[in-house]
Every structure is written in structure tokens, then in C-alpha cells.
Image (cartoon, rainbow, N blue to C red):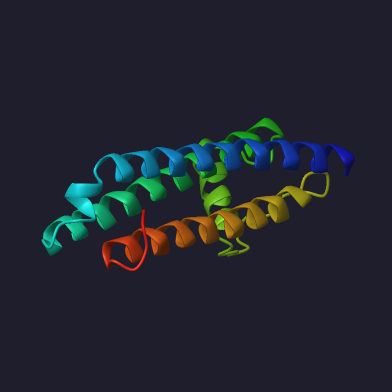
Length: 141
């Protein structure tokens, strides 16, 4: 159990740091292009910005599930990369199909992956709300 907690904590730290880097990078781009994205009356650029930022954040979540995939493979919780990736996505998104389960030594990792995904999807949502508010003129980016 201690090894599951240590590994889960390490993976959460790696995935969270990666996600933070993605958000900081998106924030830098938005701020550098403030006039194009925020101070324009052209709705097309608002759509472009929201689409790009959303896709960028989805890329971050895919990186996160990739790290969880590697963790599940590292502890031999999955037989193939596809199975580990599927399981990581199901856990990270808190979908929880239950068609693949992990044995007792490492099953605590599923809760860590779910908690990590739940929090980071919330962080992504908060960032998108901030960007949307800036586009609508109610806040600064």
C-alpha cells in the first residue's frame, strides 16, 4: 500500500506540473497576443482563441493520461499499451467503466488517477472561464 501511495503521489506531481506548464504557456501566448484576441471586435478571432486553448488543454490531458499509462505499465497492471492507455483514460476522466480492473497491490492507483484528472479538469475549466471572460470584456487575460 505504501508503494502505491508513493507512486501515486509521484505521478500526480508529474502530471500536475505538466498541466501547469501547459496552462502557463497558453497564458503567455494569450497575453502576448492580447490585441489580436482580446481587443478585437471580430468574433472569428474569439472562436479561434477558444478553440486553440481548448485543444491545447486537451493535449495536456492526453499527456497526463500518457504518464498514467506509463505508470500502469511500470507496475504490470496492464498487458498491453492499448489496455494501459484505455484504463488510464477511463480512470483520469472518472468514467469508470469497470471492464478492466487492477489487482490488489496497485489498485489504489486508480483512485489517485481519478482524483488527479478530476482536479485538473477543474483547473482547465477555470482557465477557460477566465479566457472567456477576457474575450467578453469582463476581465483581463
